[in-house]
Structure formats: structure tokens, C-alpha cells
Image (cartoon, rainbow, N blue to C red):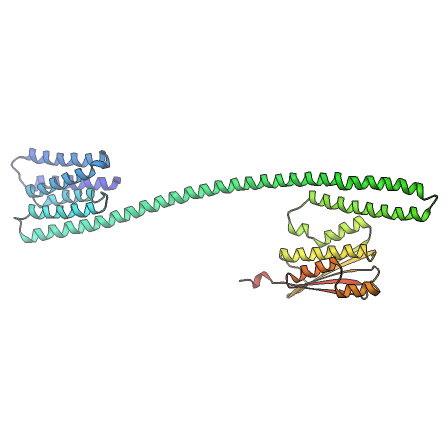
Length: 385
């Protein structure tokens, strides 16, 4: 029982007892005092004993307060209300209702010789006290349930926070393990593929050295193969280094200016990057398509067109973003041009499928330079509701 309610119970017993002792005259004040001391003892036992005995103590207090009303008059109704405060908290909930009904009947029996007005006041006062007590107990139970739910919520929040921290630790461990596995795979690739290719290149160079004096044409053909092998090894090495130095930032990983810078540094060709319009932040899907199309167009320009200059121009507008990748390489002629216009190679097909996947279009322009044009529709973030 809350401390405030206990104080109220003692007050409903002590205050009426003092008032009664000064207002009314009794033959034996010692017995009067003893009776109230016994009532205070019952109240104290109700606070100290286990809840197992609460129903028994509630019944005893109910009977005793009804007898006090019969013995000492109408002011003893307040100790009866004190007993009501005690047994109204018993469970299950039908017990307080039964005890309240019995208590009201006993009070009516105790005041049966009083005038009708006093009996009416007694019943109304007790019933109002019972209703008010029921509402107070319901509010107290709601408060206890709220506090319990709050404690449970706080405990669940703490558990979720701990689980989140553990998941972050596990994710970091998995990422480290994946990176370690990737490094092992890359080192194995460097050893198995690139290492063996370099050994083969060394053997081909030795063969070319012996062949060139006697057969220059055959030796030069072998030197061309050596150049291709070295170029492929460089590409594999560059791809392996990029995987080792992987950056999780999408903008950095798919930056077109960085792609051109790396291409110019690795190949020695002239590169140019131009932006028209007001740039705005692009969605990751658009960044990936632009980057991969630009990389494929650059690879084709170097491999097939033997270009010495590559330019990328990106144009921003409210409805679309356009990227033009042009080069000064050799233009396709004859059957090669016909094949390119009909279906294109694997690289062009990949660019077309990738662009169509996000509702874009891919175009080819032959004059004045060979240009691959990627058009992608954009949706401003302010238009998304």
C-alpha cells in the first residue's frame, strides 16, 4: 500500500477517535481507548503481514469497524471507510465488491436504531467513498501498468541497443574477414595469373631476341604478342589494386573525372571533362550506369579506335542528364560500321541493356568524332512526396 494511503488510513481512525472522546461522554474511556488501539493494531498488521493474510485481516477490520459504529455512534463511519481503503485493494477484484456489500449491510444493521436521515447520510457517504476508492485504485493500477510498461520498454530498448552494438561488431568482423579473404584471393590471382603470364612474357622475349636477327617479321609478330600480354597484365594488376583500395563512397568510386584522370595517367592520352548546366546530386543507379558506360566507351576507343584523345561532356537539365563520350580515333568503316549500327559488340549491347534498365537511351554519333551518348531521365528529390 502506498505511504500516502497508509497515512490517510491512520488519519481516518485517529482524528474521529479524538473528536468522539471530546464530544461524547462514555462510561469507560479506557475501553474506548483499548478498542481504538486494537483497530490500529489490525491496521499495522495489515501493513506488515504477507498478502496471504490480507483477506482475513480485511474481514476482521470490516467486522470490527461495524461494531464500533454500533457501539460509539456515527463518527465511527470514518474508521469503516479506512477499512474500505484496505480491502478495496485485494485481488481478485470480486473480493472488494463482496466485502463492500457485506460491510454496507453491517453498517445498516449497526445504525438501524438511528433516525432515517442519519442512515441515509451514512449509506450515501459510504457508497461515494467506495466509488471514489474504486476509481483511485483503477488509476493506481493504470499508473503501475504504465510504469511497468515503461520499465519493460526501457529494458527492451537497452537490449536492442546491445543487440545493435553486437550486430555492428559482427558486421565489422564479417567485413574484415571478407576483406582478408579478398586480399588472399587477389594475392593468389597475382601469383597464379599475372606471375605465370610474366614468366611466359619473359620466355617469349627470349625467343624474340633469338628470332629477330634471322626472321624480323616473325620476331616483330612475337613482340606484338608480348606487348598484348604486358598490356593484359597491366590491366589485371590495375584491377587488383583497385579492389585492394576499394572505397565505399559511391561518389568517389564512380567519379567520371577520376576515371579520366586514371586513364590519362595510365595510357598517356589527352583527356577532357566538361560539365554543362547546374550539377545536382544523382541517385546511385544513375551514377553506376554513367560510370560503366563511360568506362566501356573509353575501353572501346583505346582498343578499336586507337584514340589519342578522349572527351567526356556531362549536361544537367531538369528532365534528364546527358553524357557524351567522344574520341578522335579511327571511325568504323564497311562491315564493321554495319555490324555496329545493327547490333554492336558485347560492350555496346551491355551499355544498351544497362541504360534501358533505368528507362534511358543510348545513341551513337559518327561525326565529327565517334561519340557515345547516354541519356538518363532524372527525378528531382523535391518532386518525391
